[in-house]
View 1 (cartoon, rainbow, N blue to C red):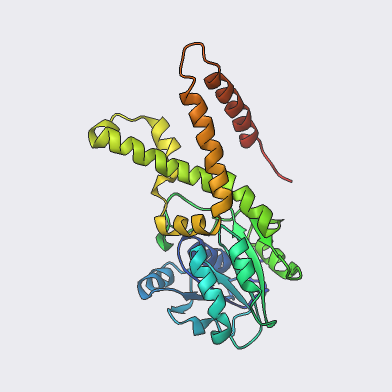
View 2: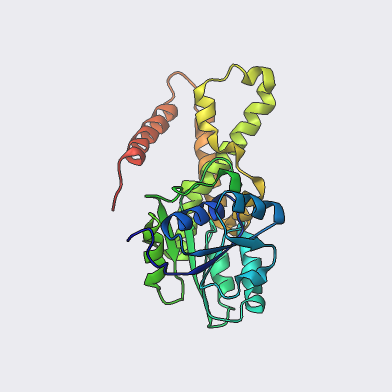
Length: 287
């Protein structure tokens, strides 16, 4: 599809213009220059977004979303739920609503209260960076990255899937329940682990000790700069699955702790398992 083709959604309102919202705006601008991108966020964020060319108009009024064919909720998870529940008041006409939340059950349940003119399909791009904010946004953030759609009880809409594919994402479909359980292990647990590890190491080593750290600590704690507000919402909306994942990790660490000896086999077993799964992780996966 040519870059000057007519956009499937001529007007797109993005509520929350951080890394994901800003990158989405840039990707839309690059793919469909004729599309109108409406940014809804704080004044200072909107000014930056417009300076970067990621939005055409913007403000902090949710009423700006009225008239948009597609509304994307790109704030933290609980904020997205709050906005979703208020959309009916500000958007009188029909619209397709999606989100980018890292958890799907809470917002899918909230969407059941929407009037029929507002159709919701949950979404989650598996793309990001160690730091947030619109300043870090880039147009290729979603290129060749999975974008999971969780239609829930809403009829599937091929237009949204096609739109995301045209932006370069690899669309996948899951139930909200399966999504939240899987993400607890492949995303939420790694983030909590990296942050906890950096907190423990930093408190013990201090600034002087950290000056001696090599690439291993830096690579392992790459996620430790992630914003707490986003992850607080993720933890709150996926508490059961994340708690189970943490319990499993704690059990493995406890087993290592209980077998710290030259002839103990736990370290060898865990390292062998980790190496094998790391090999699988690094294999190309294009299905």
